[in-house]
Length: 83
Image: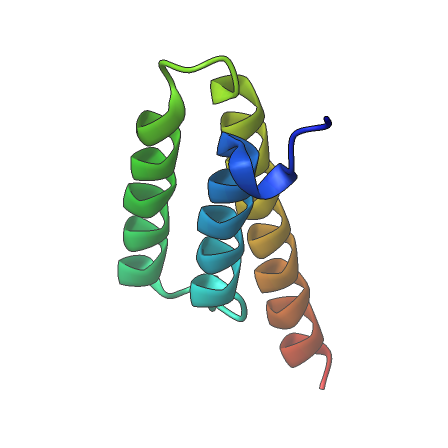
């Protein structure tokens, strides 16, 4: 019988990363405290999974999410400057 995704570390990684994205979505590029907290939360997720086989997946997910949040923050700053 095939193992359910919910029964794997991937489920927890997805949940943690989804919460990270949700928490910092819309973070302003000038919000220094927010970026420090994002970095701390991202490191915490990476460290939580680093000693298991799925650790690289968790690290890549965290990097992808932080890059996306950064991209959106830069776009918002650019859009605000153009108005």
